[in-house]
Structures are given as structure tokens and as C-alpha cells.
Image (tube, rainbow, N blue to C red; front, side, top):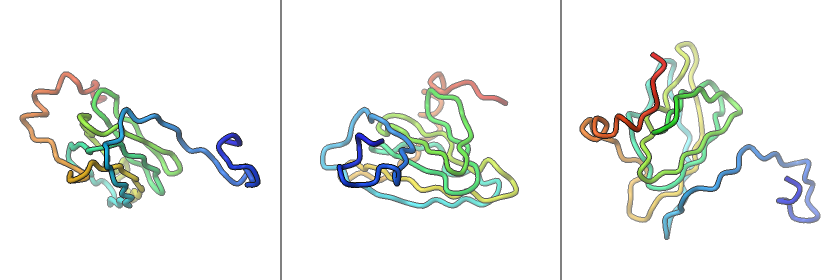
Length: 137
């Protein structure tokens, strides 16, 4: 991290949580930061995609996170996640726990004149089912 901190600033005051090279940033993109809160047991947002990359941090609880082509995983409080956006389906962002809420923040780079989130219909999910990683259950 020290090489990322301008001279004269205390490098020990900063912690790198994640570094990622997104595949693209839409020309003319705007940034949006949101906080998402789901109650215990919530399945979260149905399968969807974002027009640009998204970077997140779990503030409390545990989230089930699944992107197209990757196995689902649990992201816990204090951990980070990111997704490239574009044509990648985000299958899960629900609460992993039945006894506690989950709260996370996400900063998204949205393409101009595009919604931040677009739901994926059942027909497209069926067409792309071969791109989804095997499910544990």
C-alpha cells in the first residue's frame, strides 16, 4: 500500500481491502454508492446484471454471493466482493443467515442512460444455464 499513498501521508493509516482490474468502464459512466440491507433469510435480489463494474464491502452479517461462471460463496462482515458488470449475471446476493440481517455497501460504475440493475428473465436464465457453476444442493 505504501506505493499507493502520496508522500507525506501516513501509509499505516490505510488498508487495501481489494484491488481489481475491471474489464471495462463504460465511457461517460457515473458512480453510485448504495447500502443494501436484507432481513434474516432474505433471498436478496433476483438474478440480474449491472451495466458496469461494482465493488462491495459487507458491513455486518453474511451474504451469499454468486456470479455467472463462479461457485456461490459466503462473504462475511469485513470482507469485500466485486463483479465486472456488463454481460455477467449476478445470481445471488441474499442473506446467508436466518437469524441476523446482512448489510453491505456497493459502489457501481453505471453506463450512461442505463439503469444500475436489470433483472434477468427466466428464458435467458434457461438459455445460459450451462454458464452457471454447479450448485451445492
